[in-house]
Amino acid sequence: MAIANKNLKYLRKLRGWTQQEFADKLRIKRSLVGAYEEERAEPRIDILEIVCDMFKLTLDDILRKDLSDNRGNYLAKRRALKLSGGRSDIPFVPVKAAAGYLAGYADADYIDELNTFTLPMLTGGNYRAFEIIGDSMLPTPSGSVIVGEKIESPEEIRTNNTYIVVSKNEGIVYKRIEKNGRLKNKFNLISDNPAYPPYSLSTDEILEIWQAQVIISKAVSTQRLDLNQIASMVTTLNQQVNTLKKKMN
Image (cartoon, rainbow, N blue to C red; front, side):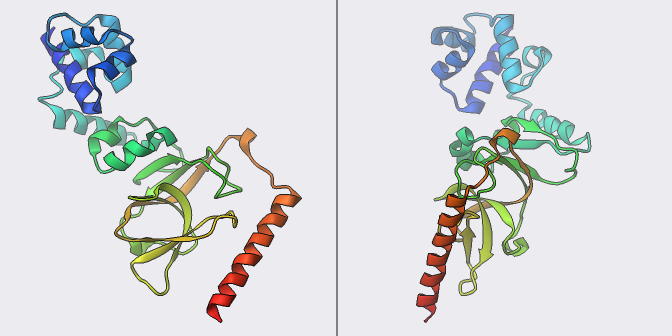
């Protein structure tokens, strides 16, 4: 069963896990992972089944195919299979994976490992879904999932549309984008909640932009603003307008 041993080691390294991290996920001892990888022991079928579920493989894949030697073909076949159904598989980036996404957003192998889903109204495009937290885009509630379509060039940006912006310093944020009238290489990012002031990002800071197409949120999490919240927002907005007027004068 040497191929299975080799595949376990390859898959562990593909995710960037240590032997201890892999062992914790499989609920076995680290020494047993080492024994598998060094071919001093044969992996149990129940362990291989867990690995198959984790990496979306079959037992035949892990027992009979050398995944490391056929890495390119194997991953290419998986991607082609996903696209063959017509509907686009949408990779999902939860909040807990945000840090890893900033490092792996351009790595096809990393993206291929993300959980995916499909939506009947979206076909044939390059889509990605991001979980957002916080109240900066109310009434869109915290915990919503924003499904965006990839923007390949800043010229495609339309003022006041909403976008997921992935940047080096700000991470993953959901904002409206306004082109900066004075500086062509800068964009203003604006929250729907006026309590959050706008800020600017330069194009060289931005890694990716995804135009929002669908917002998914739990019905129970829909928030309703009370009169005090509305009054507070109006007051904050008036203050910002007055500040801008003073600057202009």
